[in-house]
Length: 312
Image 1 (cartoon, rainbow, N blue to C red):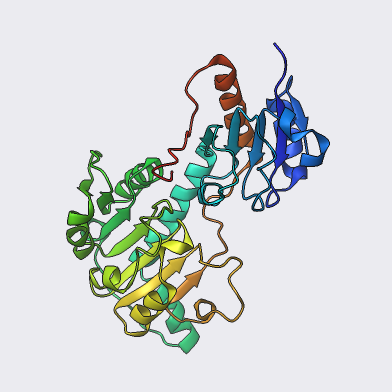
Image 2: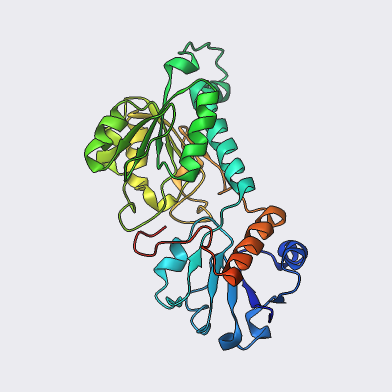
């Protein structure tokens, strides 16, 4: 059987990091490390992350567009991306584990009030805070897909009460689940620490606005590890300034890198991390790519297949 012609087209990912693991995982296929190395019409598969607008348009005969990242909103927003080829997002256990570690780290920091102690340190104040035990603390997860469900299990293992909200009904062991817009206010009203794991779609863009934040418990903590465009920056800053929210831990932003003049950098109630909650690891991600290539050749259902209508 003829090898697939596979093109690496990912300006935000280093060829050097991917060359060895992909070459090993896709031994027997023809790998091209730049789009100029092949006639685009001859390519079967493109491996990509966040390509420049229009970069995929010349690839008219693709059998698969495989994202190297979990998020695919940039690919879906580009009208020039070929629509006749299936699009698959990355599902890598290493990335899932990384995200769950980040969820637990930020949730524990919020539970232990480490943000308050950081402020006390800056003020040179020696002050002890008392708070509930984990079993008395409620963490709400906004988005109960694969990541949300895995994070929920880990948080339960730490002793937290866990609530989950999703667009459609879910049944998750040990988690009180809410579904649909009609239940979101009830979910937020009981949430002390909110973990955001929603995909970015036309329906979720700007979802976390003043009205949304007003529904959270007074003094709640917001943890956004999903996408920056889910949040209205002005509304979040207003809620923090007013003391309506105690703290926000943000890993993702409307503009990345976060501009040096942005208030998030200096706000005493904000923790900034540079989109590092779940980094792609080429060594493990290459195995996922190889499995989807195998499935494509065998005519089997692809993993991580994106429903373009839903946006994820």
